[in-house]
Length: 96
Image (cartoon, rainbow, N blue to C red; front, top):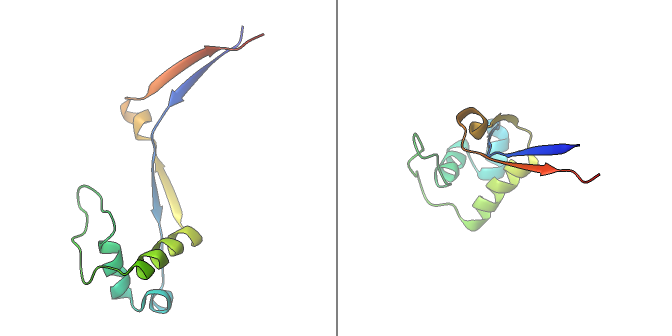
């Protein structure tokens, strides 16, 4: 008999980007404006940033998210349900 056990996990993917000042100036106007745009995005529950400067325009927000989708980053995955439990498990017998 062959059977499968499936664990249903949740993972937090932490993506770290590094942008140099000349790219930030070209895309966002300045490094300070990029920081302001970031500060208006959803923040972590603890230790998040307080909003700075003017709220980003729709165009600035789109540029920020486009940058994150098209740029290289370092990625670290935290499979927190694997460490702390709290995940569902299903079992299935495979048909012969």
